Amino acid sequence: MRRADWEAFVAVIVAVVLDWSLAWRLEVAGVRPDFLLVAVTLIGLRQGARRGAGWGLGAGLVADLAVGRLVGLPALWKALAGYAGGNFARNFYENNLLGPVGVLPPVAFAQTVSVGLAVALLQHLPLDPWTLLPLGLHAAVYETLLGTAAHFLWPGAGRTAGPGRSEPFSVPRGF
Image 1 (cartoon, helix red, strand yellow):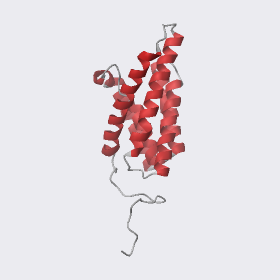
Image 2 (spheres, one colour):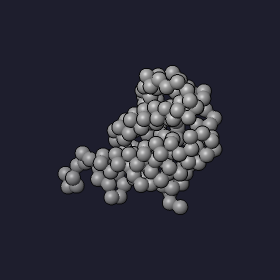
Image 3 (cartoon, one colour):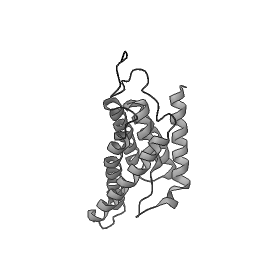
Image 4 (cartoon, helix red, strand yellow):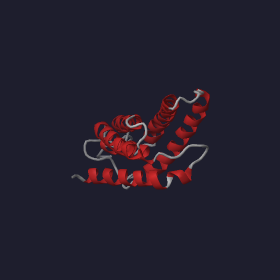
């Protein structure tokens, strides 16, 4: 395995352990942090769209199967987050703040609202979408703050662009 695969594997394992052990203690305004969503977004930023989507779908399915509820729907959102993170890395610089800030709010909002709607429909609960919208907004803000902090704490976040990537605003050689 490549070094990047090991980094992604460790990030997913740490995210799953944090999701299952610490997330319930960090609940704010009815929203628990989704460390796995943040991890696959950062993997997408580091390794590209296809690898981010693959890690998101695989890790999301394993986590969904372990929890045993709504298998597949959260995994699809995690795959989308990895894919969107990879597209941000391709179109912008991978260490840019726009990565987590641009990807996590819409994905966290959509995941929270869609999973809430699915749970309400499957359990035949009275459906009030206006209660899900503030919950989705809280999730978007929470995941963005968490993802931005994790983005800069990731090892090598301040490194220069890797091979095959151009560094924006760089000074041409010879000056």
